[in-house]
Length: 256
Image: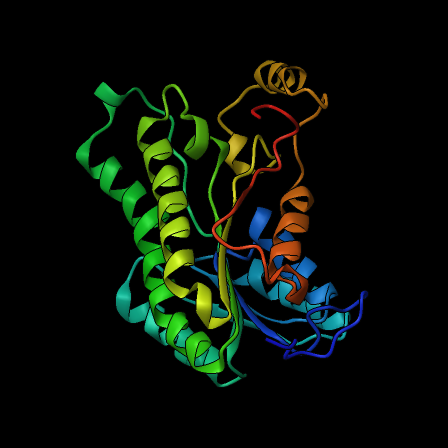
């Protein structure tokens, strides 16, 4: 299949519309900015942080791309449909980044059913709903990039994070299976599984624990949101058309 988008090495996503869930802060914010720098117009999904989402939108507009903050709880089917309907006013979504998610650290025996269900809803159900809503438009267009944000604990499993690891491992299986299902359609499906990244999700660690984690990581530092965004940008690009069903793990060598 010929490349459907004219692009340059500096703006490989020129004119494409991307939806990034949970894009108002942290990794999602960095992903939205990276896609915009590459020329994409970005739907900035957020649940509560309207001011933060508007700030991301302002940064994107300053780059010369368009940005559209859209509020939606992506765990809720009706709100997901409204999110995608809003996006369609601006074009056909060519890129979907399922970034929104939550983390919980707890012993399995201390994990309540409510906590389990909350993790499943945020980390598995939300990507399922968003993908199902966007995929028909990508299939009709014969082109799409779906990128799911997982975790190294979805690959290796994390002690005291059994429920979280299960959901992040589930999204990897979802990625691999869907990639095979749509491989002949021009739609790729991949995952990024970050290691320890400097975001609010490490807020439960004290300075000594953070220092120890950095020292445990072979490159000698914690990751930055930009490290994840670079991996997403590659998978979102037209040149990644032969990459599907894959997991890229920017983790500083913490697991191999």
